[in-house]
Length: 211
Image 1 (cartoon, rainbow, N blue to C red):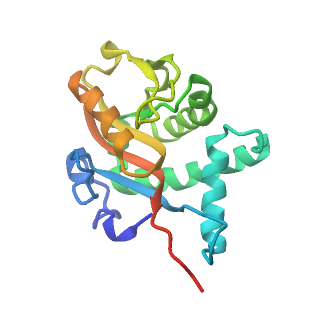
Image 2 (cartoon, rainbow, N blue to C red):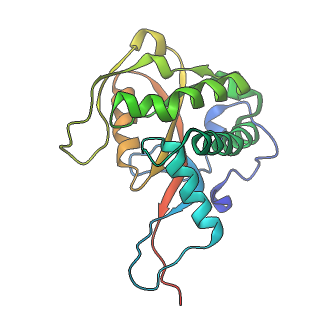
């Protein structure tokens, strides 16, 4: 996580949700967000290389996604455990007891199968550990992503009755430009759902050439 953009009083949990995240960076759409690790894109060409920590973060996110035949159940479990171990302190340090006021919503992956593979257990464990409300089952995939467009989002339905009056914290596995987060948050906001902020497991950073 980029500590320079963290809330300056993270050791002092706050009660007003908007105040908790006021120092977090913002996307172009205005939503505050925080990310947990840098995600370095990689190419085998040239002299570009990654440190051990950068490789570990890449592997964690890759295995967290859990949508490849190369990800075995043990690797996914380890990545899931690691992701949760990063998320829980962030929520506790940022929101304190006010965490319980939040409803966790994971931004859908391209397909219903991928969404379940990476987010169903994650959402259950995080909400059980924090007292947050679990919004996972209240975003339903209607049709998988058809491959057209610049967003990974599938066609989905929102249980607006469930979300009425709730304060939502979004979660996604990886962010490149923030386009999918903005698009999803805008859809929910248009329905009157209150989006507090977003947390992302990894944020893509520019490649750096190393000798």
